[in-house]
Amino acid sequence: MSEYNKVRVGKLKLKGEKTKSKKRKQKKQDNKDEETKVAENDAPQHGGWWKVNLFSEITGTVAIEFGNHTYIKALDNGLFTLGAPHDEGDGPSPEEILTAFPVNENKIALKSGYGKYVGIDKRGVVVGRNDAVGAMEQWEPVFQEGKLAILGNNSCFMSVTEEDDVMCNSKTAGPQEYVCLRSMVQRIDDPTKGIPIEEQGSLTEVEVNYVRKFQKFQDKKLRINTEDRSKLATAKAEGILHETLLDRRSKMKADRYCK
Image 1 (spheres, rainbow, N blue to C red):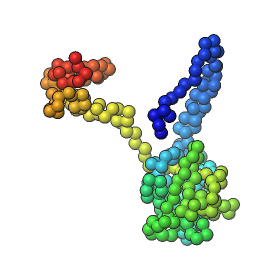
Image 2 (cartoon, rainbow, N blue to C red):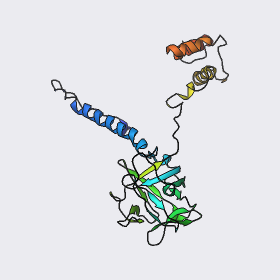
Image 3 (cartoon, rainbow, N blue to C red):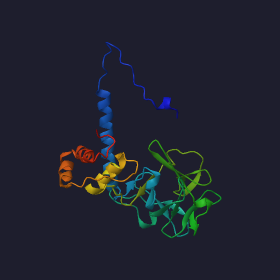
Image 4 (cartoon, rainbow, N blue to C red):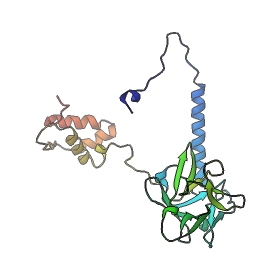
């Protein structure tokens, strides 16, 4: 992308032009709030199994949901069928649970509860009979416009027939091929998310990080202020940590932004 294309061009405001109503903006916000509410209620309605929205989230314990509260189910003969509907608040049954493994940056492998990898036979039937991952046991989750379809190695999408058999024989993805991939892997929020890398760690480490970042000496030797650091905790609580650190660096004349 060229530098020109990176420039965001806003609409010109002409003198005397009437300001548009904010009702549309309010409507968009209301829709966003409604979507957030639906997403928060989704997992409890499925027994704690949450909806996967990113490829990076596809790992560990998963289930493939077709429709609403119905999941594909592994049979002891190596075939798959659509399981019976579950009540709201219930998760998938043990035979409906799979284990996902990333194969590369855009493909995964799936293992059934019988310890066999999920693949496709020559007729496009989804089966779980192999002990190792080959070409036909690799699947590509395709995310687009909030929907998900699973592409097999035969360039067809996974779907369920009227007889509830799980097949992979459709070259295009439509409502019959849309799935919801659900996970029970615990999502851990990163406590350092949104915090600049220089401010991660103890206050002593933070000061060293900023000295290292802004020092002006060519010999690269750190000039750390040896005065009592107890005031740094107070400064952080009052929201003036950056100013206090700058003042401490200025006393050492170690900052290229200090006068």
